[in-house]
Length: 115
Length: 147
Ligand SMILES: Nc1ncnc2c1ncn2[C@@H]1O[C@H](COP(=O)(O)OP(=O)(O)OP(=O)(O)O)[C@@H](O)[C@H]1O
Ligand SMILES: [Mg+2]
Image (cartoon, rainbow over all chains, first blue to last red; front, side):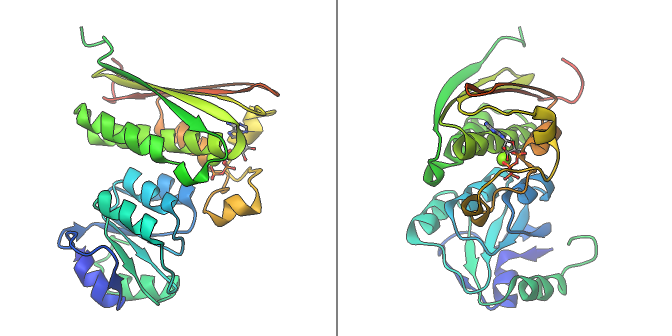
């Protein structure tokens, strides 16, 4: 199991929501830019990797009981989106990695069956 | 006694208001959680609610979500005034979507919403009248066996 803090290091990311708990273990990682995919296939306790930065990502992640969000490609959600995530206790990590690279860096450190 | 409604609330959904899209379903989820209903059922109901809410925002003018819950079932009815769905069977097909490029940019338009609703509900009824609107009745049982 990887914690969000470990993922933060793996993707050389920046935590946009300081103060939120990063120590809980994530059981799965899910990467997608399609909200319906996230809603149909992700499992509770997953970390969501996405290139989208709008408020719907935060609401979608919240609805599927995600542990946190990793935003790739150097994108930045605006302050309102970050505030909403913080209010929902959903950490957001921003990284310059591409979606593929972020997945690769994290999955290389996941035990089998957790991807 | 278990069958009595322990909770009921209505919410308004404004068509076209993407900035607030999903807020109603987040609230529905929190309310159901506070009622102490089992987390997996709450999650299923919230996902179905969100897909239906977003459809109102994307395709209709205005909608009302009517949430009621008993210890055994969660019932969500979403009725909208809007264009209606011409061919419901076609719309249910995974991948069928009339979403605009702008909607796709936001991460919608996979054509998965209705089938996702089907997957996450134990009962689903869709009725629609062209030019008038659409009504979805969704039921999630809180226990897998019949009440
Ligand atoms: N409330 C509604 N009013 C009018 N048309 C609707 C409504 N809901 C769905 N539709 C029609 O049915 C199609 C399929 O809907 P569905 O939710 O399955 O996919 P989508 O909304 O296009 O994409 P996704 O939900 O994956 O983001 C829509 O593209 C739209 O044409
Ligand atoms: Mg939809």
